[in-house]
Length: 110
Image (cartoon, rainbow, N blue to C red; front, side, top):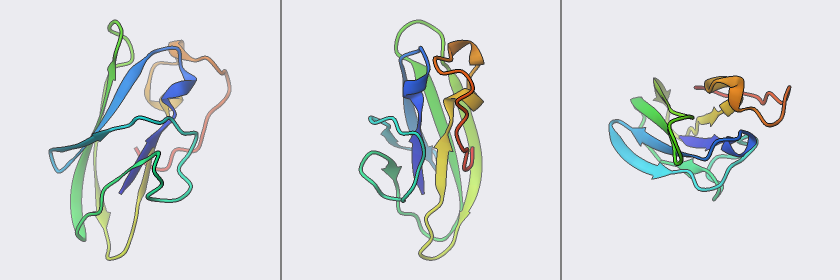
C-alpha cells in the first residue's frame, strides 16, 4: 500500500501520519501531486500480507487549529499487489485553505 498527499497546495502547515491496522507507519515528509509508481522514496509504502486491512490518515495542523481531519477506511490486498492511496487536500479539507483555485487532482482512494 502506498500513500501520498499534496499538502503543499494549501495555506496551512500540517503533518500527514499514516496508520495501518492501528499501527503507526510513518509521517509523510515530501508532498506530491499524484502517485505514479508504488514504492518511490517520497511516498510511504508498506508491504502487507494479502487480505483485508484498515487504515487511518491523520492530518494535523502544525500551527494553530486548522487543517485537521481523520480519514478511515479498509482495503483488500491481493498477492503481489500495490494499491495507491492519494490524499488530495483540496478534496478532504475545507476549501478555505486553497492556494491554487481549480487545481483538483486525481484521487485514487480515500
